[in-house]
Image (cartoon, rainbow, N blue to C red; front, side, top):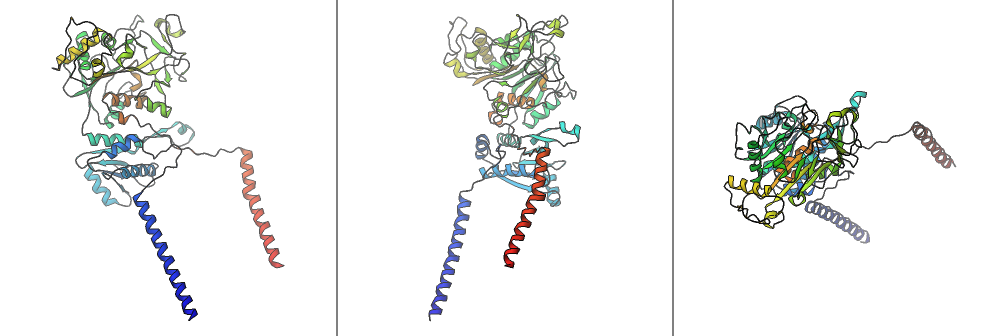
Length: 526
């Protein structure tokens, strides 16, 4: 009887224990499903989404599917899959599918036909009626300097989040901002594949879902409807007054302007006027008749006029560059100066030289460059952004900024049939009852060479160029995500340290094992 009771108690105890273990497993699985959490143990947080990306994905109203066409052996496969998994965890409207072209050939071929892609090793973001195809080569920056000594390329920056979030925004917005590049003044050409052309910039902006066209102010006196930004890229001849007035009216009526202005040095050694001086001065920006020099930040094997910039202003355009500690290389620039009440006109310095830089005004003796009393003292401004909101007029914050600005705003509004006007005899300080564009935005850079094919791929040039356009069209969510530097974990040992490790691994540890074995054997023999 006692034996039977003991077996019954043991069986009950075992059954209760098994039931408790089962209940514990179910509870842990339920809690892990309900309170799902992923961790990122990388030092640079490569797979941690920014708040911008989380907000973009969480706000999706239509489903988007990400399809990875990559073999698991590809270098970026794990990083891409892990990052897109983070996106999928943020929203039910974002899903992920991985297609291995080697193992699932039939499925891969069907999707290739569906999406119309010509090759694999891509990522497709599909919304059903629209899609974005992303090349894996666009997801990272590489350093190829090691190829000269037989080493492979080294990844210096992972841009996955930046690229994927931009594509998601494009699909969600279903719109393409239209950018016009002026022609007819010797500007850099969009279709020019040479080192002085802009084909690389055209590809870069195309990936950001911009629509690029050329526009001649002389042959087409009015800017086409639907234009978001006018870009003036490196003119070598001045703009006529009617052309400048057309662009001024466009900006005053809410259009956006990106002016990339190289110094136009004439045969006499003087800097020729661009014809845009009056337009820019209305917004507190003056062009310098000089060439910027910065001996503190030179580029090896290049002239003194080529330097890099790491002094960034506090602005959405330059904040990612500051965070990533990525410089912008400027091959040839003229100085900019903020005049009048530029601070009241929302002026922010984007790029500036070090305090040791200056604006060289003696252009006839560039072979013997030296800082003179007549030169612009550093730090020299190279790029500036202007943002003037409608409320600034309504609150009278720019009432004394200059008649030219007020007239430009009003005339532009009238030309576009927008309400609001200021009488000519109104005293200074009159506010504008403006109901047209919500803000004026323009960026002026004293250099255009940094966006050419020969310079765009240098360090932060491409990011700065893309950020300027995205800010001008109010896509701040695409410029707040800097590239992330991947972890480069290395163990560098000297010859003496390698010798010590060899002795430890091949002599000391095996010797200790032999001694321990001998001691155990001796003890058992006793």
